[in-house]
Image (cartoon, rainbow, N blue to C red; front, side, top):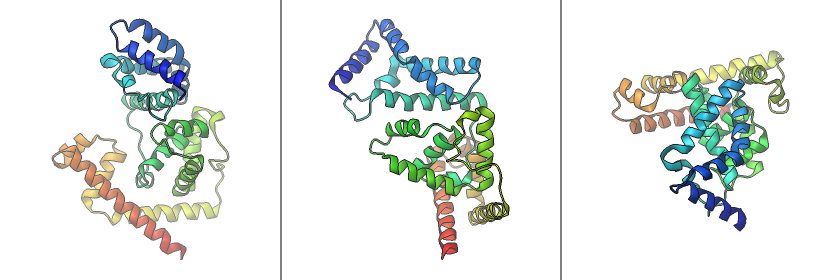
Length: 269
């Protein structure tokens, strides 16, 4: 960020935190509405639903004297626009969950590192263009390179079975045919080899799940299939607090990941 841009954003944030913040908020809306609406449109809502999401984002940005906006570090590496894109994306996800429920994540994806899971959500589930995905991720991962993003997309692609990739392709086509990336997603046609590989990977995942304890399998089901919060899971399983649930979930995912890695490395020898 240049010194001039830094001063401009710093001044705007200062005015938002003052008693006469109305004019500053109007300036913010005038300047950044296109950016916000562009991110809302990535979710492919109908016009009315998109407007509701936009209003939700504005309400959240206004809360507690623009507390979210005040968290931006003007001395940091990320530009304000890139940082704002990441924040708006997260608010879009929050609104979507409140309206339509939590998106279920595939167990194989859940076993991936946090960065790869984020790449899955952006590049595969939302079909966000690669460059937009890169700029969005840069807000949380300032040192990210395009080569690292490309590698992560490759890892996610390889974890998905042909049938799962086909299902993703169908969902994207239903929302917006123009967003399908033929280089990222395979064709809808699958041959005998793909079907056999899909069945084998499904069996591998079932075996991996069977290697977990009953409590660990229940944890994964409640979190990723039922979409329950950590607090609710703690109440159901009497685990005390959400922190215990988070720790036990991570242990289960680590075991699942280790089993699959061992299975595939053994199969490749």
